[in-house]
Image (cartoon, rainbow, N blue to C red; front, side):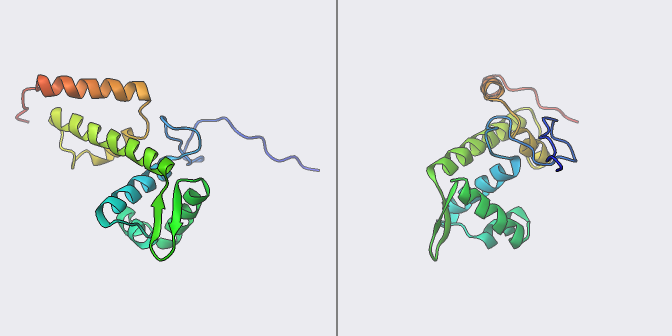
Length: 156
């Protein structure tokens, strides 16, 4: 009888695309964080979220979005509301708010360093998932320092 393959403790690579978030490694992936952040934004903008709105905002197809929404529901991050779509649970809101806070701080830090958030959005989106809590606090301190002592603006 064949044994199932052993679980790998190898780091995430192209062959293992389920990247875990550095600050919340328990069971959440970068992709899940992006969904929760998107749903959070939709709830605050429209009052609710539905699969088609999430798919459009993330530029994904509805089938993939539906699968992830179901997964997030099973994990306790979303609850379904009949005829209204779905809403974040308190735990889903906690994760989404944490990501929003990271995104806002990184956006501000980039701006304080003279880097356009539009030109560096992919950098910000990538970094927000990988900062440890300690690194996040240090980056926030750096942003506070740069607010008090702005860098001279570059002419290049």
